[in-house]
Length: 306
Image (cartoon, rainbow, N blue to C red):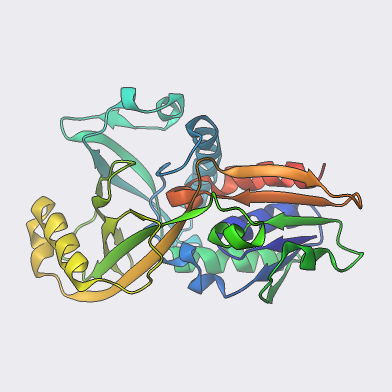
């Protein structure tokens, strides 16, 4: 079995399959640390993902896993951190929200203790656990998913290529939503904050990570540039400093750009090829790949195993 794609969706799916006893190879164009997943702010929350009903269930499955992984934060990169989603109310969300422990309304919005994930550490942990389960990671580029079926020994291919699915499937419904982040020295902030609507181009959020305070952000549809815009970066810092003034004087450590692989609805389905072999698609998770990774991985594994 081959999983194409080595971001958080691909590695999590491959890990679930390997721990179900399957022999799995991951084909990835680049190391996990250079994928879109690696630059994510990585707060657990179903953001820019459809359909909400399915996304909520996938997210809750993942939440249970992350709560367990948070018992070993240094190893897994997962911590449970308190914070506020400004301006949100429970009645604006789907039924899934009532099942999130301690999610409560306050005068400022919704407050909760949620998983916040240090992605470079977490991706490394996923890869090592996958290798320990007998998996293999190969760095290689593909121009067509059919390449993965060239060996007769491959009975199932799982497509976790994210934005790459736009060309590989091909699926023009997959579109980039560009996010720009700024990393600054943390002036002592220990809680996260978001003010980010699903359709907002400009968003305001900050996440305290071990490598610094991550400030955001933007959500620019159909923008492909990976070059940070200095004016946008200044505006991000200014918006975050309106919430916490001490951010204004924080030293800038770096800039990040990520292209969220957005689709009108996540594609998670099974194709039976003419030769009887199976192609499973698991892509289009928008800004919530980390949030739904484990739920989607278990569903993808069920489809792969028939």
